[in-house]
Length: 368
Image (tube, rainbow, N blue to C red; front, side, top):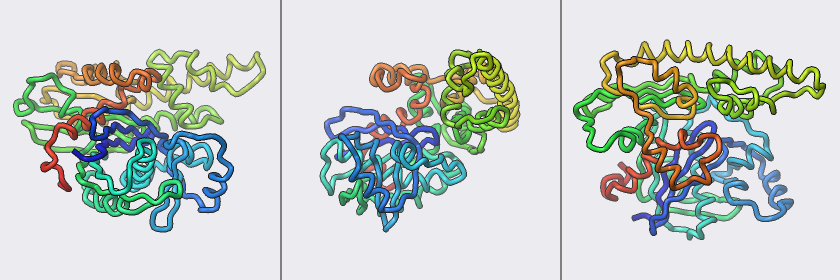
């Protein structure tokens, strides 16, 4: 077994990492999704002015080939990075990988030269880039700097799978044969939606579309002014299908008590309109791409959970699977980390990949 085993989902709203050292004690690490190109002088100034001892993942920056990137909370909070939703995930994932490996090495006193086994989920639309991504990561891990400290690791094995793979491998009931079923796997995240069709144990088709939760958020932003995307996304998600005004109250910007209720009502109305528009677009997209003869549909992702009522009405006679057992396992093992904001719904795919990665022989995945 490698010194460090990592399953990484480089999400556009949250980087989700399950990992273990050789002793096999699974841990969860969460990082903000932002990546920012930053001048070296700015990072030197940050380090010299840093007070206290922030967690490694909250002060992450890397240097590679003369390029400097702040990653995660540091990029978001200090350098005001945006989410770069138009850029390929795998391109940003390179710097995210260096940052998370550097952070884990610092937190666990991992020496240079240690071996790493890495599993990564990418949207189906970027899955063809997996060989390029493997090459980039292998070269980068062999020599980079994390917070100014030289780091070097051996990528012992690499496994890249399309989003939804962890659900297929671990999200279904034990004993249920893939070879006898036609399955649609629907992953709806912040940036995009990925659909996999598996027929008798083989992926027969897959597609990724930029139709994620950010489209709903963008619609609300057009209808009401002055709202930041991620803060708005969190509030909308928490408000749920009934659009709780309590969950939206902190979005109100006016101070006049007589106007606060009016603005809150406008925000709620905007969310209701955006939700309806978004579902109509999503429904049309799914109905045109999911074969009517599928035996089961597997759903995952925070957006899928947000729209669970609507998604359950899709193809009413088809079995729906929400990976409840995977969610229960995540809650049992990582309750402190996932109890806020229904995070377990966003972790199931990567959790499935992690256990697949740990349960697969070393020989099988060595640079395969």
